[in-house]
Length: 300
Image: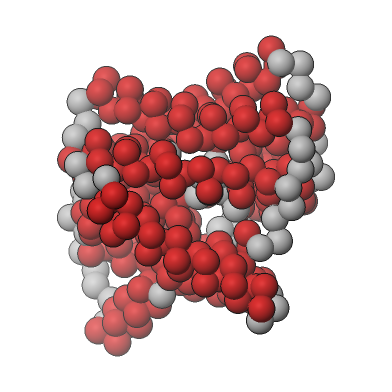
């Protein structure tokens, strides 16, 4: 497992560390890279992965459904446990969103790619888009504790470029269309920049994380994200007899640390943003110890 850690996780950590150092010593503002990655690199990556993969529409729908079930179940369990612990409403909302939504993009795609290659990466991209859709709809609703209207949720959903890239990819897959060669090469080139760009961005964002006490909610969120979520994914995979790249991508993505996106949602709706960023920081560090044996188990 030492070789597995060195060859698959250390490169990811070093790339994240470069972003952290850039934020500390070069005072690089993550907002610019965040917007370029969000609006250009990520949609191009999603489009390229889906249109050039061997996934059928059925496989895409199955992975989308798989990701949805895992994310929702984690949220329900976190909510029940939080209620039993008598957490306050804002704290409970923060615990639920940090338990549900995974860093499936700037961390998960890189780890899946290093560990299991392009076939698993195609499945992981579907998990990534599904996670983003749920975060911008259900996540916003939870964070606002019922104050967000249905229209507002739809408006947030409409701001996710990766969704349009996925829909456009479905259209091309269904019709058999192909991009002209200059556009195809441009899309591929920009998509190739997504994973390294997202890793550097994660380092930039982690530099601004502040530690906050509140050990019980932090332990609950971290345990749900790093232990319960992959356990649910493994159980669901066994129940549905899932194997191969689907299994590897689905379970590994479910085991990723808390999404940086949750800090954006928490800040927007004033749901303990400092606590949420501390969960992102802690789960990202601890994931090094949980992902390595899981990757070995999955056959990396």
